[in-house]
Length: 188
Image 1 (spheres, rainbow, N blue to C red):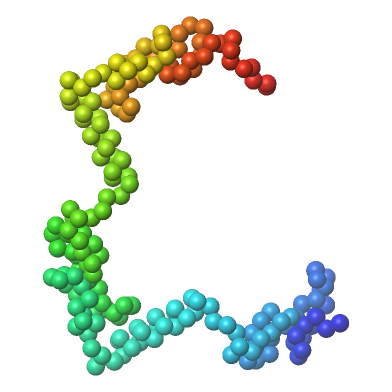
Image 2: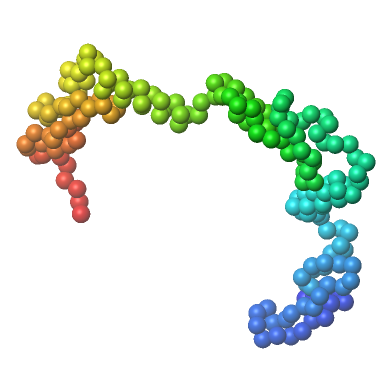
């Protein structure tokens, strides 16, 4: 049988699969077993992007009669615009004081939507300040959140209290305790 592409040299070798194919003929590409006309090879996305980027770079640097990309005012009002050879052909400066963004789009700092982590951090800080700064707030231990017989201490961290150890003869985390003789044994 002919394992190599028609017209490609085939050499017997001792390693698997027992043969090695030469290079594909001129005007084709492949591994020697399978060859394909170069003009029929589908382009990869990266090849297309690289080619377009190169074409744009040549166009921007090689033709000085092209209009400035900054002429269309792509940057936020009052932000400096500079023509560059890299895509998209311009670069915006920093957003004005009191705003944030990428230079093309700027937004008042007080209108920027909060991220989930910012909200959680702010609420945690508010709760901490409230618990430590206002002594007229009711004690979190008044609601008896700990198991009967486990000590309860007010703290500034969420949830505002900490339970002590479970009473003798019980086990648990101080909030929930269980008689030791009722705890199921684990098999080891």
